[in-house]
Length: 122
Image 1 (spheres, one colour):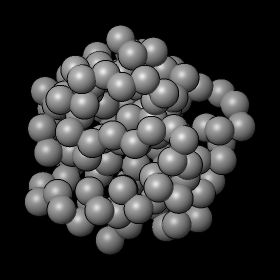
Image 2 (cartoon, rainbow, N blue to C red):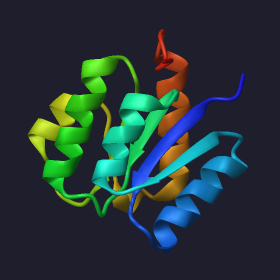
Image 3 (tube, rainbow, N blue to C red):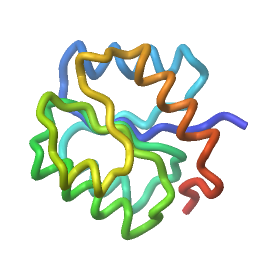
Image 4 (cartoon, helix red, strand yellow):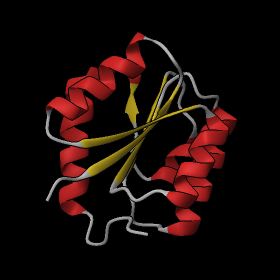
């Protein structure tokens, strides 16, 4: 069964490349631009994992993860960022630094989806 990734980010090449690489790896992608549309997608869409783009602010990432975890604590989250946020790490349970690149995202995503017993299904 094809896994679906909710990819929340900003316009730009990194967002488009990340989504293209994930799609090329066999994931169905739900691309969402910005914080508010991300909240709406968390509440209304079906997905198995979430990738939060680097350009979202730290506050936005924490709010998105809190909303997500209110719906399903087990859904894997990969938050791309430059800074280390203890609160975000504790909320998300998964983290990849942006310097790791898309190859690291693919590896971590495969690992998290394999180890997640119950995926996000609405």
